[in-house]
Length: 183
Image (cartoon, rainbow, N blue to C red; front, side, top):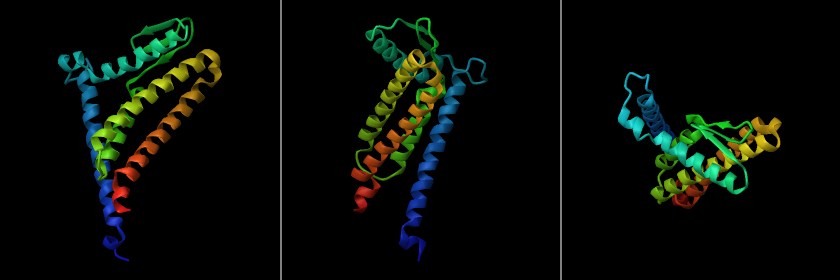
C-alpha cells in the first residue's frame, strides 16, 4: 500500500500544518506575555496599557460578579481574585483565561481545509469564553456550598470544557471541514 494512495501523507501534512500554526501562535502569545512583564527586558508600557490579557480577564470577572450579584451574593474583587464576601475565592491566572485552548482551537480550524472558518473561529472563541465564565461561576459556587470538592470541580469543568471544544471542532470538520468534502 502506497503512502500517497492511502491518504496518510495528506493526514501527516494536515497534522504538521496544525502543529506549526499552534507553535507559531503559542510563541507569539508567550512573547506577548513577556512584553507585558514590567520586570522584563522588552517591557512595553503601550502593550501593558492596552493589554489583551487584561481585557479577557475583565470580560471574565465582570459577568461572573454580575451573575452572582443577581443571585443575591455579595461579591469581592481584588485584581484577578474573585470571591463571595467572607468566603474563599478564585485567583484567575493568565493560564485560566482560556487563551491556550483558544490557540489550540484556532490551530485546529486553520490547519484543516474547510468552509466558514471565520464564522467557526468566532463561534468557537466566544463559546470557549462563555464556557470559561460558566466554569468559574460553578467553581465559586462549589467553594461556597461544598469547599471540599472545589479542586475536583475545577478539574471536572476543565475536562468538560476540553470535550466541548473537541465536539465543536468535530461538528465543524464534519459539516464544513475536511471530512465534509470527502463524503
